[in-house]
Length: 175
View 1 (cartoon, one colour):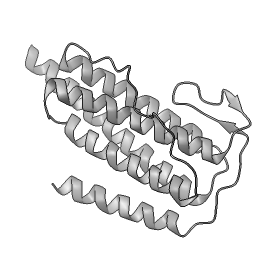
View 2 (cartoon, rainbow, N blue to C red; view 1 turned 120 degrees about the vertical axis):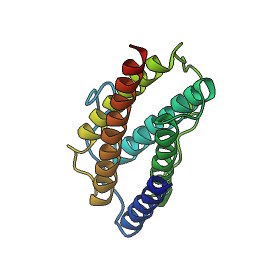
View 3 (cartoon, helix red, strand yellow; view 1 turned 180 degrees about the vertical axis):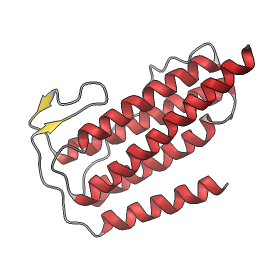
View 4 (tube, one colour; view 1 turned 180 degrees about the horizontal axis):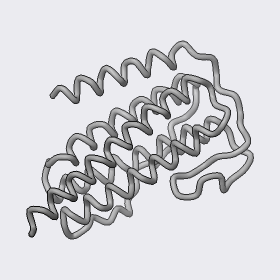
């Protein structure tokens, strides 16, 4: 419960940061979680849309894992955090008057056979998310967006550590 209160406080702070910022300027490239810096001639809007889509993909992925394996830690906490991340990015897109990308929830999610495989998949997903935000932060972006991306990157690093601990616990209990 304490983590949820902290997360809400962080989200509230982030929203306060971007509500008082000027509109974003265009930049030259967009990145994806797996193919950073592949596409040129994009905008801050596209980067925000991409971040939103990736967070939505994580929401769908972790939701599918919870449906199969139950509402267990760390999946439940990370899933809750991802929903908050998506809400912050959605609010930021709306603040700038940009459309929310459609069909952001994938229909092609493959749920692993075991909880250990789900943890490993989550670990890789968080590594990709960290790399995505690292790449986005190299660009000239408005400070409010950089602040949000920095916080989301830190959150992904915390999720990575949670998955690493879950994997270690799972493997220890199987021996």
